[in-house]
Length: 231
Length: 231
DNA sequence: CGCGAGCTTGACGTTGTTCAACTAGAGTGG
DNA sequence: CCACTCTAGTTGAACAACGTCAAGCTCGCG
Image (cartoon, rainbow over all chains, first blue to last red; front, top):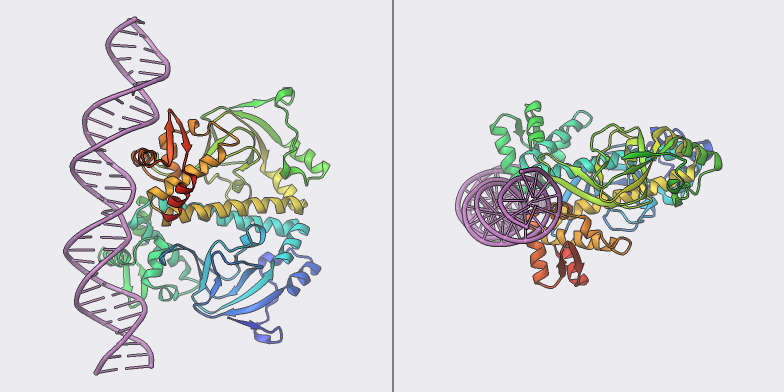
């Protein structure tokens, strides 16, 4: 992770992301003034569960995995963070600690925006707040979906679901699967690495997927969907 | 569930709840105009997972259980909704369906507020939006906690946690435990009713709790906390 | 060439669910 | 007032799902 100077032309991004559109020029200036741009290297932590946070992160570029940490290096992967998404917003409004960790799986260009700036803008600008609430709502819905899967599906359904989720990202990012180890995959489904391996093999045998080196190709999309639903 | 006329003096509540404090007189009027007051009877559904929602609910009075529905009547109880809390806000900003169910465990006086009114106020009034975001954040944090418990703790820890959670509400509401069946309790910990019964007995045997008729008294608070932490 | 990390496989154990049977109280109708 | 049914609670035994362990394998890298 290294800070990036505003002068390094190639890295300067205007605050053009859709979610900043509703800001007034002064508000843009405020955000711009209270942000730092940082490059996280593959493997770096963007956020660490439980750590104090005086800023929120906004991903310009790259991919990261958001996960919950348990004891004994048991993690649960919630989602893959893509460009245009916030990380650690909750720290702004609530606890001022991150309630999840996230780690870069490719190099990531990220804005760190100071909490105070975000709070100010939200209070001034209803439209921006509205946008933020919508994002929260979406996150909330996703958490509910996660809970539903964990509670009511078993291994097969959960892995199928994880595969389908990651496969969706393949369009924008053809190498997603190569970026993830078996343990990473297992952690998306909240199962052990060994079970993950066994299930992948059995899915391959049954013609649902193909395992090439590190890549995974979904062959029978609807079949997997079926499994994911049935549990 | 029955609607209540504004003229029924005893049921008229001003919008005095803390979260409405930041509204301007016109905004208060807007909310007042687009709300209905309803009495839900014990056992009525305040919200039904998946159902369309054109309104959010605001609980004035009474208790309800918020839960996620799975197939085969397997539910997971998320929390007990108390006076002053919103239900179904996510429907306002996001999907326009409820992503959880909730059922009254005592009679509940509730405001139904039209989505449009809330959206308008949020967009106009940054402070109100800010407040709402904070509530969301809190809900989010709670969901993370729920996930953490489900993922990393086993039966004993989960039930201990559920007992402690409900016990906290006993102050404001001495009869909470009587309002909940063993299945309800089990659903808070996401275990089977049978396991719940067995665990309660064993906790009683070990002097952590006392089982009286339908009430449960926590005797060894710190012991339960220990169990809840250890898993 | 050797070493270590990630992957793979099968045997075994644990956790917690399911099933079936039994009990106790609460209502209901004759 | 007594059978009756119905629901909630209780118990133990059988079973399934899944994790853990131990061992071997492969491939990239020093």
